[in-house]
Length: 74
Image (cartoon, rainbow, N blue to C red; front, side, top):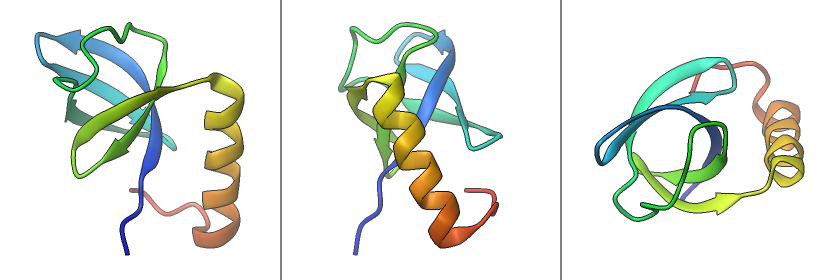
């Protein structure tokens, strides 16, 4: 089973970005979503941002993940 998580773009460095995922920062590739901007949310899978997601959907997804997995760092 594959699981995508949502993250907020904190910083962009070329084709890479720093994202905040449930309180943890990670580096990810944004090569698949070059239009993304700082402050926007993305769905992330296997270290790649795969599509933009609106803030309301991002918050809902994060809450569902917390209900299932608790506050584990991803």
